[in-house]
Length: 372
Picture (cartoon, rainbow, N blue to C red):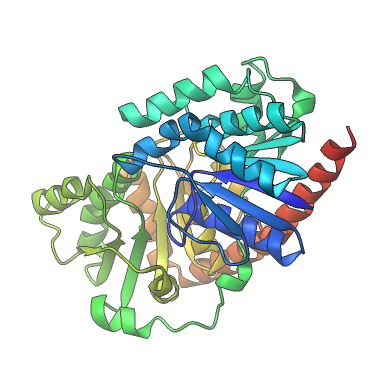
């Protein structure tokens, strides 16, 4: 099948970026011809690439993209796709909508996250555009990560249930081997490590603030444990200031940006992975990655969290550093529980969140919409 894949997320770091990359690579692996039309300066091996013009800050690229849809149309006409797949947001969906109208081929739109809990103007505007555009765009199938998104947003917005398909996020497990050594990371930062790997902006930083505050409590009882935050971003300074304010330098370590190829060593060195969400959780690729590496996770109970992790993680009250601290301390003091949760986490990813299972579902969707 010839697939024209439109996306504003793509790369080797960042949850959505990794997810899009792995979906495309799996499609190519199965023999599909894929042309990727993107705002991101990243090349997918085996795909034909089309780069839309972009200006200014990267947060604006998705909103600029529809103005350049004629570039996408020209490439698509030359490629002659059997199907259009748009990915990530309604702006990519708008391009897919326009191409479907011009080319007369099926259009599948994949939306990862919709949240009414937004802490900055950027995410609030994204939510606004999803609400305006998603009920009006022409797609044959709308794929979303969770049933909650369908019930909470899409159906109330007037989107027909028959057009919606729920497919959870996924990982390529080949990228998460369990035999990696984390000794070099431990040697640098400490024997007992709690870690997070995040881009430091927006809701990520707001969530991490609760973990940093929790470490004030944890360190009193278990001073040998360190919390290392890997990542960088425009709002890193907020965490730096909080660490200083709480007197946690040496206990909470801001390690800076981490190259994608080094993530495996960090996961392997991690004993506990806290995930504190302040938005309406649907799926977190970062959480999936720690689970895939068999790490014990403490996760705040927001949105779809309980359904997502099942019994493979410790779920605690959100917006509460005391609850987060209690969860971390429980795992510090119960090694058997830590190890057990890690094994369950890996098993859950293998059973429910593999990229192969997702592409199986996508291929079935593609077959059905082409027959309509």
